[in-house]
Length: 230
Image: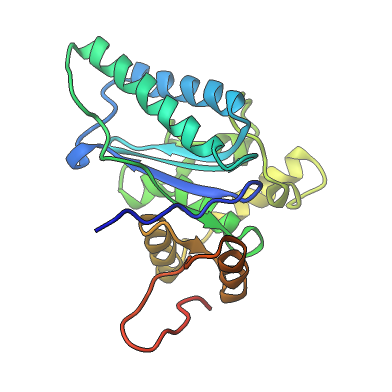
C-alpha cells in the first residue's frame, strides 16, 4: 500500500509522533533526553519551525510545532533523526536503525483542537502511569507552559497567548485546563488523525484544507462517504 502524502500547510500547527523501531526504547539515560532536546531546539531554529509543546517518552516522542514553510517539518525531523541516531550509535556502540520508519503527523485546527493537543502531549506520562501529575515528569514542555520555566525551545502559539494578558495569567489559565482529563473521544480523534496523517479538526476546516490541497484529508469509510468530524 502506498504511503499517504502528508497534510502540510505553512503556518498551520502540526502534531508529530515518532516511535522507536518495534516500539523499542529510544532513550536510555538523562543525557540522551537532553541531547535530543538540544538538537530539536537547534534544528527548529535552523528550519524556522516554532515548537509549542513536546514530550519525550521512553519509546516515542510527541512534538507540536508550526512550520513556516512546507519543507520545514520534514527537514527538521530528518536532521533530528540522523543526529540522534548517530549520537546513540556512537554512545552505546551499536548500529542500525532506531526509529520506526517515517514520523506520523496531523494538521491541527487551531481554534478547536490546539489546546487539546497541548494537553494530550503533556498528559502522556500520566496516561502511561509513570507519574500522577504532568509537573512530575521532567521530559516534557509542561513546566514551560504551566509553570513559566525558561526554555530556548518552546515558542507559545497565539492561541496559548490568548489565555491571559501576561505570562503569569497565561500559566495559571493553562494549569486550569489540566484539572480535568481529556475525553476519550478526543484522545481517539487525536490518535486516529495523527496515525493516519489526516486533519485534526471540524468538517468545515477539513473541507477547507482539502480544497486548498486538492486531496482527501480525512479517513475514508466504506460505502457512501460521510463526515467523521463533528
